[in-house]
Length: 347
Ligand code: DOR
Ligand code: ZN
Image (tube, rainbow, N blue to C red; front, side):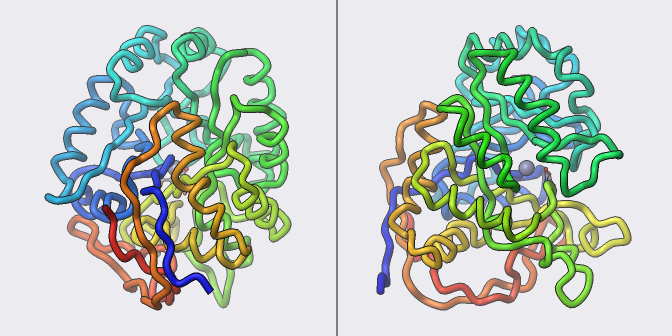
């Protein structure tokens, strides 16, 4: 049995760090494990310009504890009015690595998102020209569509037409949750990739109702049926370079989760790579973890592989039931549970 695992230091290709007082904690958990992260722009107000992205990046770096290295890869929040020139400025900055498309109303802080993607086509053309990838939250917002079908319907109504209309655009289908999404990514070649979260790999929708209503298992896209989880596990552990690690770690204060109208998001950063290691081991695919966590994403984004390594050891440890989060507390994913892989060191 493998008792120690050393891999190239991984990257998180989808992360919510939030802002303000919480940054010290969120940055710490990610920087202990990951060398770089694609940082989501859905702050209040959202990060819509290169100048704002540069200022947010400086706040993240200011919150980084001494002795740790971490490179935040910034993103812009696409709106109906993002001008093509902003894309060129963002690309030239070297700081902004992607643009995030939230359909307006699809998820947390998406009110300023896109109402009609066709209106954004000139901006998307500028992205195709520069090589800037588009990261999509792939769910329709049509209230007529069942919440469990929103990703599959998004593929037909939005994503397939988008890939057809804007030829050179590179796209990441973020946090995929369905076998339909996996199939599309598999058949679309190198211009369409996907991130997969630890929660969608390890839980199905029964986890939302296990012995009662479980607000800490609520995220968007919502957990799906077991058959879909299996398709994600097969994709992640297959070695296919189109699939890579993106935690979508999305902390909300405990009182905002345990509420009559709870927020969507799971805070997986405090055990992210450990959770993926558990899963890959269970599938007999530990030797494929490094590709998924440390190589495929960098290749897609055209960035070098990290030079440092991390080491995980086979040693039981339990996640705390809650953690500090600015002036509040947050319940991490797998709170109070015992994991068998522990982070030893990172160098
Ligand atoms: O569960 C989620 N939480 N899904 C998202 O798309 C956004 C995220 C957040 O920012 O809280
Ligand atoms: Zn997200």
